Length: 150
Image 1 (tube, rainbow, N blue to C red):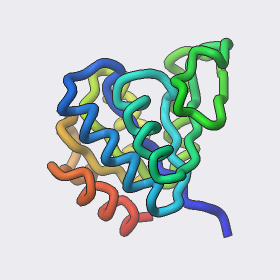
Image 2: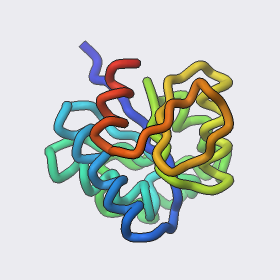
Image 3: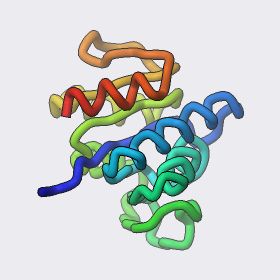
């Protein structure tokens, strides 16, 4: 049976409070034995990977660069695309469901891809653009909800 794959998308730089939320999201994903996929860089991506690794989870970083060394140190599998922001579509297509934590325009594009493709998505402190994306405040609630949907 294939493991569930949960995408975590969000800000590449953000306040400590957001990093703590992202790390808790990662912990909960790792605890459930799912694979965490993200953009593989800093901020929310790094914090979520760190959390997943704390719980023995597997992390995949789909980075925009050709150089795999640019991924954060908590990524187990680096997919170095060399395709820049177009890698956002790869992240969405690779995920069964997604959790958006904070974020700016890159996250907005990922949310739009997820909605267009009908992928379940839950948001914490992020864009509010569509009723199909449920918004919650608690990271445990976000992970519980995404696992219900996938």
